[in-house]
Amino acid sequence: MRCIIFSGANIFDYDFIASYIDSNDFIICADSGICHAEKLGFRADILIGDFDSAGKIDRNMYSEIITLPCEKDDTDTFAAAKIAVEKGADEVVIFGAIGSRMDHTLGNIFTLEYLHNQGICARIINEKNEIGIIKNETLSIRKRENSFLSLIPLDEKVGSVSISGVKYPLENATIYRDKTLAISNEFYDDVAKISVNDGTLLYIISKD
Image 1 (spheres, rainbow, N blue to C red):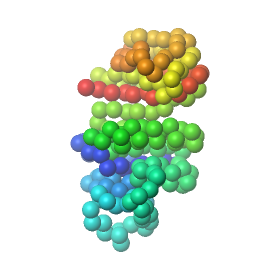
Image 2 (image 1 turned 60 degrees about the vertical axis):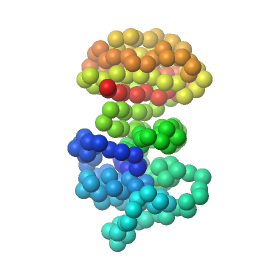
Image 3 (image 1 turned 90 degrees about the vertical axis):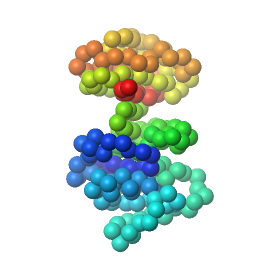
């Protein structure tokens, strides 16, 4: 099952987001993420949050609403991710997760690692970026026009990193978190292949 999570950061191109969603997706809205789902014409399967930013909600429209306390350990988006795990999702896509609050943005990005550790393929997507996790595995990514491909270590260093199908390939390299070796690569072939055998990377597909 694929789960869509709407978080509360801005979405500027709803048509772009709509192209990723189909009627079979299970939709969870984290607090004000409900506003995005409503603008797209999708009804959430679950609403979750402390609802400090969602505004007035017609609770009769939704079959399951989980109200969290304002003082809590988890962000609303992380709580939504935990629900996705409980519901048996094998893929999660999070929209509205990159915003002006860098603390929330980073928290959302690290939520991808939590989901990956549960065996779930998870990504954050907005109009300019796609962010995912690679951990001791090989991943193939289809070429995106006018886009850059960057690798950012989540560990202090990540070893045995290889990347092919790009302008600047690597073979069994070590990438360090405090350096910028693998930022702003470019697609060369139709498919880029990334292999990581010792550690965890973020991959980011981005455009200006």
